[in-house]
Amino acid sequence: MDNGLKFQSKPFNLHYFLAAGLLFTGKAHAVDWPEFQGGSAQGHATKGTKLPLEWSTQKNVAWKQALPGEGWSTPIIWKGRLYLTAAVAKDEGLKADRELRALCLEASSGRVVWDKSVFSQDGASAPRIHKKNSHASPTPVITPDGKLYVHFGHQGTACLNLEGNVLWRNRTINYPPVHGNGCSPLVVGDKLFFSCDGSRDPFVIALNRHTGKTAWRKERNANAKKKFAFCTATLIEVNWNQQIISPGGDAVMAYDPDSGKEIWRVRYDGYSVVPRPVYGHGLVFLSSGFDRPTFYAIKPTGKGDVTESHIAWKLTKSAPHTPSPLLVGNEIYLISDGGIGTCLDARTGEVHWRERICSSCSASPFYADGRIYIIDESGKGVVFKASKKFEKLAENEIGERTLASCAVGDNAFYLRSDKHLYKIGN
Image: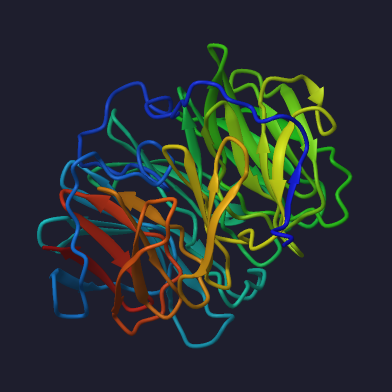
């Protein structure tokens, strides 16, 4: 039976490596979740985290807090506080003016500590967004020196301190977006990296994170048929050298963080790329985007165009358009946008199982204490065992639209719906 698997070379089997700790100059607290997909950028909760199997709008809800406006950014966690963004409309209608805001909440109670306007968005000139997007979709990132970075794509990027005071703003990075914003920023040392993959002339850029000024900028030069993408980059280390892995239209590129020099690239057919890559077993794992995604395992050891030489394996069936892959030990787990889950051997691409997990899905799965959690777009949460044999453990409903990924900390997870932020814990 054809499972969509295509082998490019012999299995690549090197020591399993997680890129945890590479993003920051200091160490996060054990329960912190300082960026999209957590401190490891791989969707893993801290070892020993105990999360409930069952929840609802009432059961195992430590608190529920209404949020202003709209936004699909994931909350981040730092030293007992949550940080997230929202776009608050001043009037009715799609073309309303909006305040692009940063919020801080107390993690123990949900109390709003501060709510600060960062940018004003002119509704008449703001480009249209996709019905599944918001004007506040990129997830913030926080650093141990007490800097909070919020990013609104083409609408601007800013740095705040933890009291909510704006330290710098940058609205000079212009590009023509398609469907709005989506890429979350990545901190690498003294730089803040993000992609600007619009309808034409796509590029990637690194800012000096202390000043907001451009450190370097590189054009994509992929000659993509459709150039736009929304992918959050991943930082890895190969032979003691760091690489920024950044998928875009029709190609993924690896960049040197210091200079922006392109190290290698792999070509594919794909655009509107969303899933964040993960890294382990000496392989980079990523999905190619629309129209029909292909999931790739790539050896990041080459130079130049390595399309013909460095793809270890690829999968064409039930690959995700939006949810990020989840690597746990020797297995990698995929959730397609249609709710089909696949478990594969990360080293070889062998499929262990493929099952329906949930309904339509945009959020990324996360891992805690031997279990995998996923929230679908209707607000249904499914928990299943991280195993080569499929075993569903629970289904739970909150009955509110959910496109944002969750954050995990202190034996609880934080679930953002279109109406509320929930703290789910025993």
